[in-house]
Image (cartoon, rainbow, N blue to C red; front, top):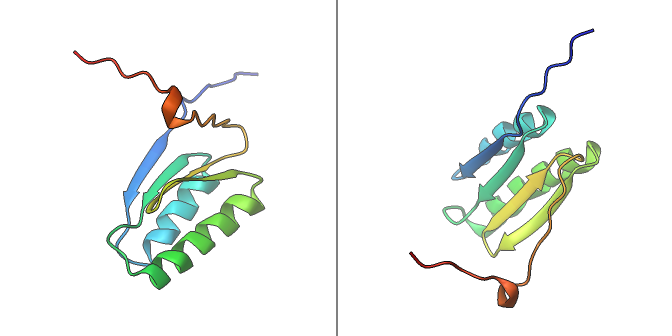
Length: 94
């Protein structure tokens, strides 16, 4: 038996229409993480899109995390996300 390890993938979507939810849902089914930015959408349309994607993620036992007001991270169940409080971040300036 041969095992093939595929590296984790992250899809970044700048959503502008509800049809983008199907792209995100397909990526989640393929075990990809999805970062969604809904800034370009009307609030009600963005909520419908996020509800659809959250439902897909929930059905697959995945995770959902709000990053900011318009940015959301959805991951498959095997991806663990650790959110560090902003006051603990240490930025390196070059």
